[in-house]
Structure formats: C-alpha cells, structure tokens
Amino acid sequence: MIRLNLVLLLAVLVSAFYLVHVQYDSRRLYTELDRMRAQAQRLEADHEQLVVQKRAQATPGRVQQIATAQLQMRPANPAITEYVKGAPLALSPQPSAEARE
Image (tube, rainbow, N blue to C red; front, side, top):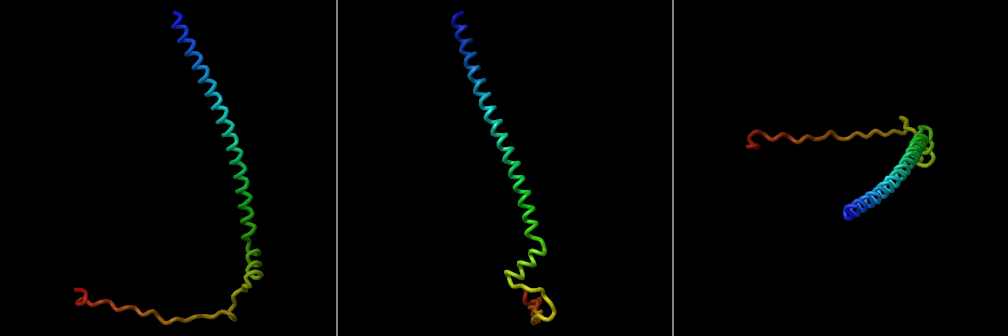
C-alpha cells in the first residue's frame, strides 16, 4: 500500500511539474505572439507610409522637374528631333530543294 501511495504521489508531482511547464510555455508563446502582432501592425503602417511616399515621388510634375533640372532633359519637338533611316534588312535567300538534300 505504501508503495502504491509513493507511486501515486510521484505521478501527481510529475504531472504538477509538467502542468507548470506547459503553462509557462503557453504564457511565453502568447506574449511572443502578441509582440509579433504588434510588430506586424508597425510594419504594415510603415509599408503604407512608404507607398504614399512613393506615390508622392512619382508625380508627373516632380518627374518633369527632376528631368529638366538634374538631367538637363527637354521636351521633344520636331525642331530638335532627328529621324534615322536605316538600310532595309537584307533577307538571306532560302536554300533550294536541291541544296537541302
């Protein structure tokens, strides 16, 4: 009887320690999940802000301003346009039926 009581006591102690360990892991994982959700929200907000900044940088007026100021570009007009005419492409003749055999 004493042996059975000791085995049952040992089983209760092991299950109690296991329960404490599982609860600790559960709390640790929950706090990590909460931190990851907060980080995901921050990253989503940063992404939205970057998309807005990208749109602001790509407005036609800003592109035009940078093209003229930094790259010294100017709008194309017929007075400064040069048209290049190339020679027509010479097509190679098709081999005859005798040459293929």
